Image (cartoon, rainbow, N blue to C red; front, side, top):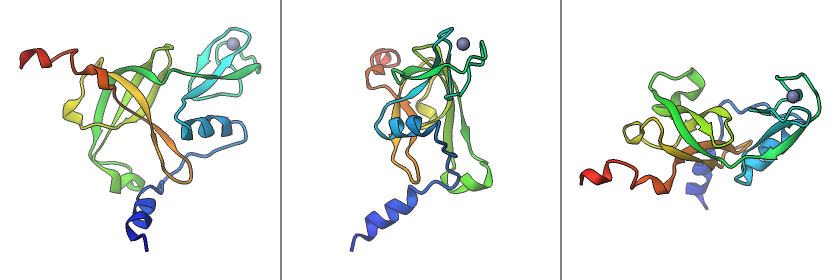
Length: 153
Ligand SMILES: [Zn+2]
């Protein structure tokens, strides 16, 4: 009975899940729904990532959750071949820094082979349906094929 599904479920069990709190619950819930959110200061409009209970720009506690586009460009990336022990089973994997359209910078897993990536590549958020929480990752956007390289064919 469904051994394949059971092992897939185990494979999706995070070895080192993020700690969730009452404050970050809306963030993780949105990720599971495929939306990337963060907090914006209602006083100075500063966007921060990850969500924070107070604004790092003006120290106001008047922050609200806003939905981000989930689209951006790859600022830099690397392949992790010697990971921390808890991520041993997932190596090698790619991590990168993404600059979102909203001018928010974040560190994320990149769901693509290292050799297929370039700095400046358009990327978008994808959901990793893991347990106990879903995670965000980024993947190359499908409309990137005519940006470069294809012209050499
Ligand atoms: Zn502020």
